[in-house]
Amino acid sequence: MTVAYLGLGANLGDARQSLKDAVVCLAQQHAITVLAKSSLYRTAPIDAGGDDYYNLVVKLETSLSAPALLALCHRIEHHFGRERPFRNAPRTLDLDIVLYGDARMDEPDLVIPHPRAHQRAFVLVPLVEIDPEIVIPGHGRAEALLPGVADQRIEKVKTCCCPVADALARAAKKAVGACGKDRAASGDAAASEASAATHGGHS
Image: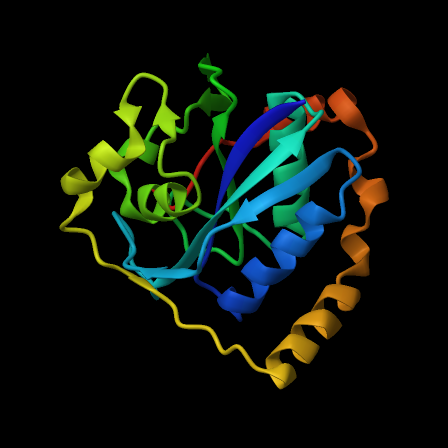
């Protein structure tokens, strides 16, 4: 089993709800255990136009290889209507592998750690929130990298903690049945699906 960190982002449609539902999708996979989820953050687009993004980071444990995990991320993105008309296009959902254990990979369709993670506040801030001691291989402690992204706009989103909101969250969780656990039972065989996709992000 490997501990991995995924960065999630969206700026089309009901972006906040899409991120919540995507976390539910991940938690429903047989090969994944969600260990922690950061707060939700609102961030300015970087090198792109469009509306502000909503972002968060999820810490998980998985038996999937890195390529198979990437393939799963792409399937979930597709389920949420992700399209890639051009680089840095607005998106309904973006799932990136930020870290996969202490692995370092540099393949045409998969680079780990994510090549721009150390330069992006929308990755570093939620990453440090859930794991203050986390180290990005090749770049050092994530917390020490925060001053370098201090000029990037990011704000934590206040959430409503009330019985009605909790009830709505439970209802939303039940509604995401299409992302049931059987979707991830493919294991490492899913890695072939990653070859046609890019390891892109809200870069």
